[in-house]
Length: 394
Image (cartoon, rainbow, N blue to C red; front, side, top):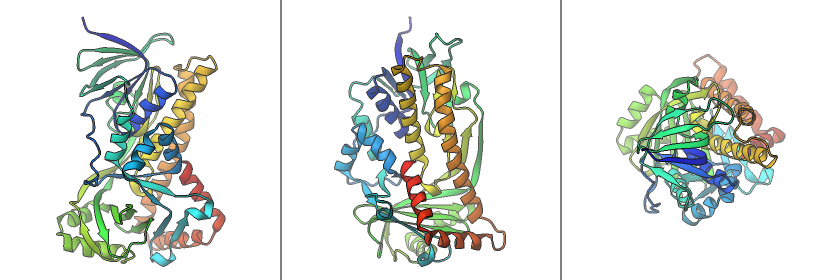
């Protein structure tokens, strides 16, 4: 007979958003089991630099700090940035943000994916996990009192009151329960790498909007930069085929040498870009978070922050319902979470998609107008302050 286990919440997915959700829900007093189909992440190796990094906003840092993850990360390697420069036509005419303008100590922190994972997994402690195990089938409850049922690839059955799907943009759980998603693939690939520049300004992030896609430089504390260069398919292929010298020359030209010359670069890797938004965020006994609910173009650097904001809102919604004596796993409670996060996520999806389409357009004059718009916002202090505040709260 197959083993049957009961818990309040089963979190499916042990990536950054999933493991943080497991921690947050456990610390809120729920019994949690986390299922991860892959391996546990290795311990963080400070001698190695991940190509994949996240720009962590202050609201996300606050959540990670409350869970005890941030101190572990800070003891290893996090890179605050206090200024950001965004331009289209000329670096000196673009939009410039400074944390001091809004009383912030930092606009955000650049953190490697491997560090977030290793620190968050280290905080799991005795939280029950199923590693190297798939959630093969999900049976949703047919009334408000029943539990969901998860059949796992190890032969176990889990019966939680709520399943949290943090299983990625191609979420098998989302597909199993028939939640449709609006999705399309951008005609771009993102190229990521770690590199050193000869004249980079410390603690400053740079981004230039090019006709073929945006180029971002994310500063590391030791003077390195992580780049995310989103380029049209043909241009991305050209950039990936170049030797390091040719790539450095292309990078310098694309950035108008705002950071000087490239001195060294790690191997480049690339991945396709897509937009995705689930039409619903919940079903009875199931709720979607992170990329399972939404995926956006990386030009605004907000993908992980949206996922962590999902975690914070879901945890608070469930805790408030429980503490008020209401059914915290009911469709009504889940609908409250969905309404709040759908509005915020759709706003960011629309903004990033509009920026992608606007700066990538071939319509005569429109890109010049957008470039002038960046320059104009730079002169409007209240508007800049509002943008900084919005980024901090994401």
